[in-house]
Image (cartoon, rainbow, N blue to C red; front, side, top):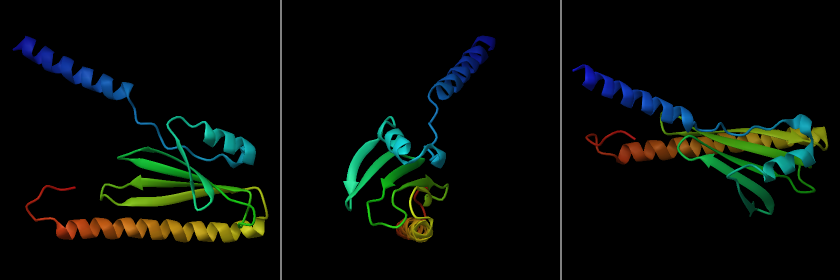
Length: 149
């Protein structure tokens, strides 16, 4: 009995050690005090990041797929608040809904930055609502006898 208890305890400790050894990294965050070029360089060197272009903007994406994902975009000349960097973080809630939360750093016209922030907030709300609607749709299509999400 004691040997069996010791073996179970050893397996538990090993599992805890493995979990501690492979922690899920937190999503990155912007530090606006670093300046535009320093942030552009920082974003370009984030480990595990994918670099693409969308709607004529540079986009850097990275994720811990079941927990969070991040999109970092850079404004183009002529856009409100340019030059600006936007970090949009999607966090998965226990309900299955992905909530969008953004932070932006602007190094241009502060009055235009307010317009950019309003656009960002509206897009965060739209994206969160799309996710909420998708989760509700999936839930309504699922059999009452099916296991949860």
